[in-house]
Amino acid sequence: MNFSNFVYDTAKLAVVRGGSAALLEAPRALSHLLKVKLEGLSMGASSGLFRFETEEGQGEGIRQDVEDFLRSDIYEHATFVVDIVPESKNFRADQERLIARNRWRQMQSLSMALPAPGNHPAIADTWQGVLPAVDYLESGDEEKPALSKACKDRREKGKRSGRQSFYKAIADYELGDLQLAEDFNDLA
Image (cartoon, rainbow, N blue to C red; front, side, top):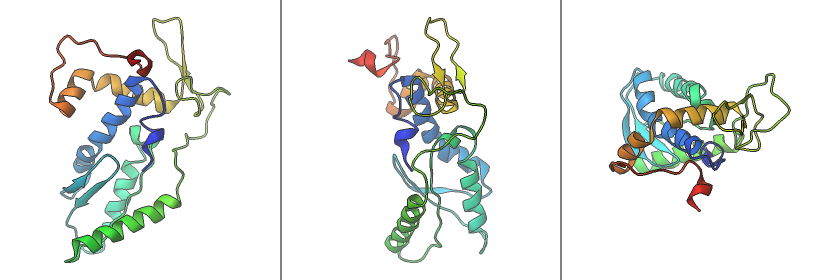
């Protein structure tokens, strides 16, 4: 729903890459979870429109399953809205009803995912600046930044997804021996 707090809230590229990779993988991961076949009708940077068939009355349960999935794992750090409408013979009207439901739900929601209450230190995430830090990054560098769970999880995802495979999947381009920047400041 609001990706600026999940993807673009830091200059650390591994964190940005991790948030982006998670969003790109969500539809595929979701299709493995659900007991229905999802047909992607439209997928963009901030929305996805899917068709599925189910028995009458089971749609709300599937909507809830999707919502539960998007509140788990790395997705707990982002905000999403999920709605369904029964298909009619008028696709455009169905789409407009769905957008209206999404907007209504969005207006009733926070624009950023808040971390679960816990024993957070009284310092903010060094890279992100807003969320409470939960741990220090152990690295070979002298600097040991304090990280929120959101930055830590996205950084891990960004490192695991691997730059080579990420760029290959997105741009269909082999990087070879190119050196990649670690931080947006390195690009300036």
